[in-house]
Image (tube, rainbow over all chains, first blue to last red; front, side, top):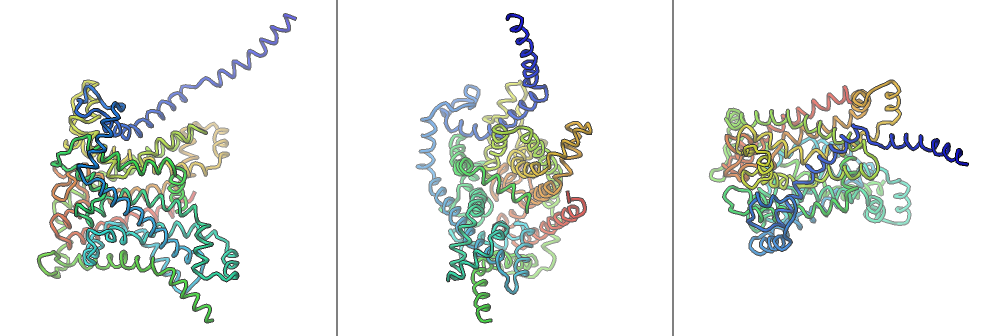
Amino acid sequence: MSTIDTSAQTTSFSPALSEARRRSPSFATVLKWILAVCIAIVAVFPIWWMFNVVFSEPGVPISINPRLYPTSLGAGLNNILIIFTETDYLRAYYVSVMYTLLTIAGILLFSSMAAFEFAQFEFPGKKLLFGIVMLSLMVPTAVTIIPTYLLTVQLGWLNTMQGLIVPGLASAFGLFMLIQFMKNIPSEMIEAARLDGANHFQIYWHVALPLSKNALITLAILTFMKTWGNYIWPLIVAPSPHMYTVGQVVGLFNAPYSHTTVDIVMTANLLAAVPPLVFFLIFQRQIVEGIAHSGTKG
Amino acid sequence: MSSKTTRSIAHYLMLSPFMLLFAVFFLYPIVSGFFYSFFEWNAAQSSQFVGLANYTKVFTSRSFEKATWNLLVYVSITVPLGIFVALGLALLVDSFSGFWAKFFRSAFFIPVVMPLFLAATIWRWIYAPNFGLMNTVLSWFGMPSVQFLTDTGTMLYAMIAVDIWVSAGFNMVILLAGLKNVPRHYYEAARLDGASTFQQIVHVTLPSIRPVLFFVITYGLISALQVFDIPWLLTGSSFAEYGGRANTLLFPVMDMMGRGFGSVRFGQASAYGFMLTILIVCVTAVMFALRKRFGDA
């Protein structure tokens, strides 16, 4: 009885040992983890630090509180209150939100309408139009920004919402992305809708759009990131304070003689970072896949 | 026949909003910008044809020379280094699986969602001489403080660090998608042949993701050649002051914008834009030619 017992023990011992050896991380694995964690810290820490500066007692020297973690909720809320009441940040926030939302709506509507035609139908002149639009993907913003600005001035759109939004609506990138997606809509579905008596616009609205929901969401998110982060266009086309965007206010606080304390600057930064961060937390999959897709298929 | 015509009209009606906007706010500006570049053009006097004077003025100016040189140095560091880092991150993430792969991918990607203007302003304070995090950390190790954004020897590298911080995750995600498409049995075959991890990367991974690499390099070049937000916001951040000490962080788009909006010389700015565009189109064309030749996996 006892001999069987020990033999059972020794036999079970050796697989356990090899299991342990297999589980025990090699030097390379440890190194890999250390590296990954360090890079993650470098990636995330600047954003975390910005948060900490806002949520810390102001005026405490950095030697005493190096802002490695938040220390005061009250100070942070106070900073946010100050920036909303004593500067025009709330107005800038409103401008940025409107600018972003209307740009998204416009790009989604106009490029999906055009993409529907390019993806599903044949008509005279299609190749030429498509070629011109695709060529534009190669033209850098550097060449269009000054003449587009001058055109906006001629239209009397300086410091207006339409001046901010309308020149950016013809997005060849969005069109291209939606064409790729809408090509996969089976033409039988469109024929069926036509036989049911739907007119051309109704087919687009009731058949093509609902089927392209995923692509539209991805385009909306990418447009959001691009528009919210657009600095150069608002800088020149909306130079008057009542049309400042969040980006411009953040930029102004940077100017050498702005006399703004670091707490206030970081509060402005933090509030500007909140929408993209929230979007990222909700739509991470779509953002990552949208970017990956544009790289591997585009 | 008539139903075909009405259908064609419907097609054009659907296309018209996009095409109209595209013609007015994209095609027309390119053409008008080309005309402006041959005129002395400012608010005070009516425009006057000056031939190629704007081009020669830009081309012979000191700031153009400085900006172009800066651009050359910047692009030749930031593009290869950025892609090297992104590739490293992609391989690192790819070596994990399940939860931790997703976790590290998200962590490395977070800077990408920061608008460039924010990346620049956050790092501006990290680099700050007194309050800044960098100098605090340096002082912990007893090192003297560094004037990251005013010392002409460090400014460019400080900027490239911001650049890579904010863009590495973007390229990583694209490269990761490429890595996922490499058939696993390629690696198994290489391993059976006794290839080390490094050899597998060089001989299996890199050749298999060539198309994706080409995209990342081309896109990286095009955006680096037009760099504006980060150097602008790391220096004076206004049309009265930009480029930093000794114009160390002056780049062509900044110079162009400064000529247009700082000194109201839109003719020169338009000429500048065209010269820059020619450069970018040439670089893109070279990349496409290279891709055609070597890019197919």
